[in-house]
Image (cartoon, rainbow, N blue to C red; front, side, top):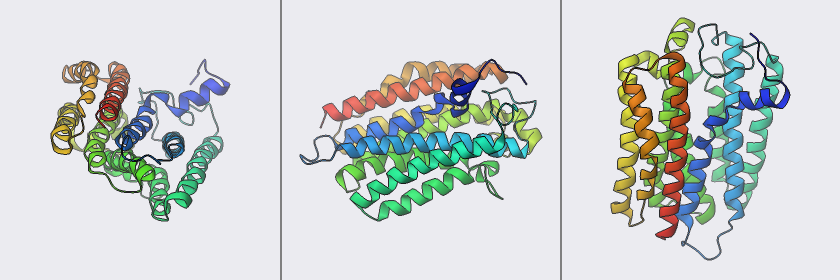
Length: 297
């Protein structure tokens, strides 16, 4: 396989920048929840949490690239974004080192936050790192068992959102919990976009993602439900917590376009733009949610 990409552009492609909203949104939402909750909040912790989340996301992407590549999962049937190992453009050991480096950055900064906030964060950090590597790595990767969506919901939804608020306020906040569900469902929608597109290749490779397990038509229904449920939880959070979470509705235009494309039966390369639409819905909805929470503090 040939590619016009070389050097840094090649590594950036492997980092899969379109997935980064999954790391950014929970941190900014969790930070917004903390606005107005205390006068002595150490806001630098939010920046550190953002770097941790981004490093984890990039680490997971490189680890996924490495593990799928050496397993032979990224075969000729794949129609998604460029994979470094599967394409033969980068040596597996180099991609493994990149994943390890990203996880190391997350681990070091996470340890700093744990030293400042409390030892409970060490436990959370270790779980995040283990979950990130064993998604497609190790002897029994849970991403091959249909549990990938559970991983992103828990770690890029609940843990990242509630965790960010926790490192700022050092307490579990109910608003953060409610909003973390919305954020997690957006992350699931992002993963479902990839897994729906990759059903043919994953089936051949024996990768039993949730999409492979439940089939094409049901995956499309679940994808649409993720967007609907995400916005419904944001509306519910407004009434339950007293903080305005309606800014999440800013996701509606791109979510509607993405859902319509999926429902029309787009397949293969035609689903690649849906990943961008889903990421934009996640980012706009997250920023809108952040603003409405902060302004209603």
